[in-house]
Every structure is written in structure tokens, then in C-alpha cells.
Image (cartoon, rainbow, N blue to C red; front, side, top):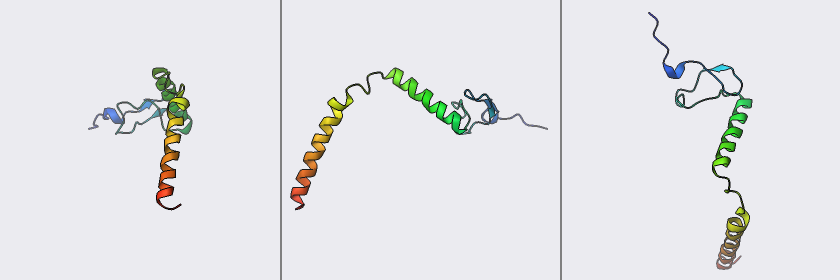
Length: 87
């Protein structure tokens, strides 16, 4: 007697290429795409676009408000360490 195929082992259609794949058992509830490199690239681009649409101001003015200050502080710490270590 054949047993029914568990839901996590049932083939699904990839949302990017349309081919059928067997999802990974660990992520079968959320996996939407196969593991082909082209689909992985498309999946990443899609996820990044969704993230950026939810966080539109994340990269705006990041250099002036964060990176520039961090670099100044890093330079000062490095100079103090060099003076302390005789460098």
C-alpha cells in the first residue's frame, strides 16, 4: 500500500522559472523557488526590492550621518593605540 507523500516532499512549481522542484524539508513551508542559480539571483533581487520598499530611507544620507562619524572615531582610536604601543 502506498503512503501519501508528505506535504514538505511534494513537488512545487518555482515562481521564477516555472519548473517543478522538491522543496527543502527544513524550509518547505516558505520556500517559493528552486535552487537553480538564475532563480536564486531572481529571488535575491526580489527580496531586496521588497526590503527596500519597506525601508526607503535606509541608505539616504548614510555617509554624512553615520559613516563619516564612525571613520573619524576609528581614526582617533587607532592613533591612541599607536601612541600607546609606541608605533
